[in-house]
Every structure is written in structure tokens, then in C-alpha cells.
Length: 480
Image (tube, rainbow, N blue to C red):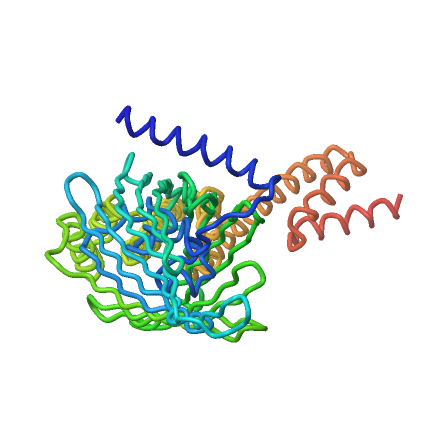
């Protein structure tokens, strides 16, 4: 682990130094064909592959992407360039206990070129070629943090003159979350090529990139962007791929001001990718690559698939908590697994909906129990003639359920009972006031008696005794 940290620190230091120096210093380099990466997929994406790469093509752009390979992969590519120049490429990667090992071979061949002497007379036909052999290894610091290194042998031949050298590539990749990844790499770090007495430096390159995985119209969309520093300038690369079907992928991108496009077909273990690059002055180039995944499946991959299958089964049986646990186990092993992420999100939503439904149901049950309790209490009070207490209980029910017809009906009964009780009490009081007024009349206190009788009629307007006595007192007062 200390050695891995040391390698990581070296890569970061080299990357930062190169980013600063390449941004401000211009120089000419040789072996520019090393800027011609391989694999139709990254080429169609405008080479925005530093953080997006996760297959054998990563060997040439960011070796750290190799660490995400879990099955042996073989890629072969044919690249038709201008003026009869052709590029052939073969890459192979295999997971091992030590990490993912990879090897690649690239050949750029000019074909036959007619030679001329100083006088312009046709001379012999000659050819030029450039090739490189890459050997790389990639592994992880931890589950979402990867590193990769590769060493390559570089050879160029110009007619009868040849030169060779070596270079080192290194990179890192960090998955921040299942949707966002970042990466950085330094390429072609090594001595230059020496032809006779002239030495040209290699195209030292520093790359930094980010990728984002999302969904558009319920289909997967990957977006990548790279910032690439060369000794002779800086490029911005942007690319996107859209999975319109399980087997069909559309790609597009730009490398600086150069547009790219392409398509990919994926069937089980076989992938066929095509990239198209139009150029205003020189026409268009076409790249086709075929990649194969073979061999026994990686045990980690198998575990991921088993957990996803169990998660799907639990989801169908509406056991969302266990489904979430299985999908999470798959995501722990492969944070970018879209099927596990989709299943996890779906299960989580369903579990939240079930939880909310349960809460609503519990609340409804609680309301029913509370209404039942209040109704029983109100009915008991009503039977005992405690109309005010009954009204209070029924009003509490109506606060919970305004449309409760039984509570409305019994409330009316309680009000009627209360009104009758008040009416009877007033009639009784009116009779007592009348009796008191009669005593006052016998004592000749007519004025006090009249007041008492008016009070009695206020309490009971139907008190005929009080009304008759009041009329008689008025007659007596007139006779006086």
C-alpha cells in the first residue's frame, strides 16, 4: 500500500508540473502518431475518455480505467487515415490476482511512397512506419479509486533509417459517486527518438477529465469531458453516448474544433464500434474496432449479477427492504452498475410509498378509534342528561370528521335536550317570581309586584297568571 501511495504521489506531481509547463511553453515534438489513440469508441467520443474509459482502450488514454475490467478483453481496430496511411491496433487485457494486465500493439504504415532525387527524377519506392508495444497493469487503492501504469516500446522507420525509445504512461481514476467520476493521466513520459544525429522529443501529454452518467427519456446517457495539454497547445474534448437500445449506442463528440461521431453494437460478448471524423480540407476518416469479452466470468462480476437477480426477485415479491440490501451489495462491488442503481432507486421509492401508506393507514385507524371513543362518551353523557358534556364530545368528533352524520344528529338531540331543560328552568323561575309578586300585592307594594311580574314574564311569556295579575294591578292603580 505504501508503494501504491508513492506511485500516486509521483503521478500527481508529474501531472501538475506538466500542466503548468505545457500550458506556457511551446515546442516541437516527434512521434506525433502517439497522439492517435485506439478504439473506435473513444475516438467517436472526441477522445473524452480519461474519466469515462472502463475497457481495454483505456490502456492508451488512462491506464487506470483498466482496473474496472472483470473479464478478458480483446480489441482489434483498423483506422483508415489520409493518403493511404493506415493504422492497425490490437489490445488485450486480463484480470489477475495482481491486477488487470494489458498488452497492446499499434502500427502506423504509410504504404508505398514514390521517391524522387534532387533533380526531381523518380527514384525508388520507399515506405515509413511507426509502431509501439504497450504493457500495462492497473489495480485499485480502494473500491472506487484506481491507478494504472504502462511501459511502451516505440519504434519508427523512415526509409532505411530507424530509431527506438521507450516511454511510461500513468493515470488515476476516482469514482466520486455512481454518477460522477474524475481522472487524470500523464502519457509519453520518456527520452526522445534519435535519428542519426537529430533527437526529437516525445509528445508528452497531460490529461484531466470528468464523466457523468444520467438518464434521458428513460435511457442511459454518458457524458465525458477532457482537458488535454500538449507541448504545442491545449485541447478540450467533449463526448456523449446514448444507449437507445440494449444493443445500440449512438456517440458524438468534439476534439478541439473537430467533430466526431459514431455508433456501437453490443451483442453479448461481442462489440462492434464505428467512428467517423470529418475534416474540412482532407476529407473524412473511418475507424472500425471489434472487441470481444471471453473466458470465465470474474467471481466479483458473478456475485454482482447474483445480488441483482436476488434484488429483482425481492422487488417482484414486494419485499423492498431485502431488495435494497441486495442491490446495495451489488453497488458496493460496482458503484457504476446501472441495473443495480435503478433497482435500488425503485425499491427505495416503493418502500417510501409503502411506509407513507402504512402511516396514513395507521392515522386512519387512530382517527376511527378516537371517533369511536368520543361517540361512546357522548352517547353515555346524553343518556345521563348531561347535554353540555355530550355536545363537547360530539363537537370533538366533528373536528376530526365534519361529515359524521351520527355526530351531527346526536348534537342536535343534545341541543334540543339542553334547550328543553333551560325552558323548564325558566318556567319554574317564572312561577316563583309570580308567587313572590302575589305576596307583594297583599302587602300593598304594587310597584315592587309589577317589577317582579315583568321579570316573570321575561322568563316565561306564556305565564298567564303573571299577565292577569299585572293587568289587575294596573286597574287598581288607575282607581286610586
